[in-house]
Image (tube, rainbow, N blue to C red; front, top):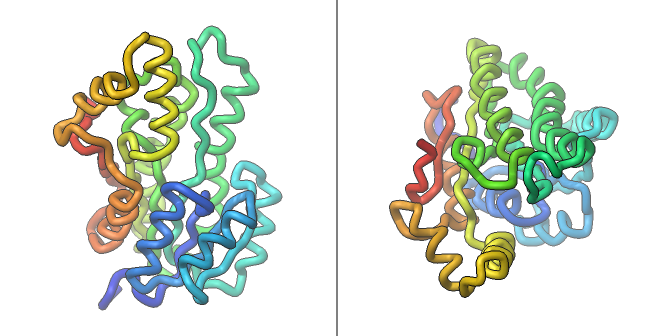
Length: 255
């Protein structure tokens, strides 16, 4: 598409009520997009909508549920969604694989993988018919490197990367790009909780637990939510990017 790659387009962001979804939505709005904020909790989405401004729209959905996604697609039939950011995800249990229940395993895959599948299946056909569109599936560097006691999460994120690579070849000929954004650990409340738990488990101080972790990255730090939002915008500005997995991890190389 000629001109600005984002301005004037409608972007649908899942899991937009907080964290990375919120950050991505705010950056898309800052670059001229109209954003549809989706998630399970309307109250959180409404708060983000206030930050995004009057052009945003809120719609609730359970991306893991087929009927809920179908209802969302029907509700948004009047929107020309040409950017889809599949960000919704859950962390799942922290335990040895042999201690993880089938239900916990299925819960993680339902949100992190089936949710991406259902959203793509619902919103890709109009993009294909129009001959243009962009999909960004948010995965994680944890899908490509060991993360102790987190097998459901890491396996689900690697599944998203594989889904993306194959889907890109299915819809690329129609002019639709599909890419993966794989953030590393993101500075914020969740990582702070993880450091506190790790310090308690090992007998180290909080500062020692954090330093041991960030020392694995080239920049000796975590990435920020804002950086993830900016990365999504940058990906949309690269029209030749398709089937790619972008590693945004401050140099926490996944090899």
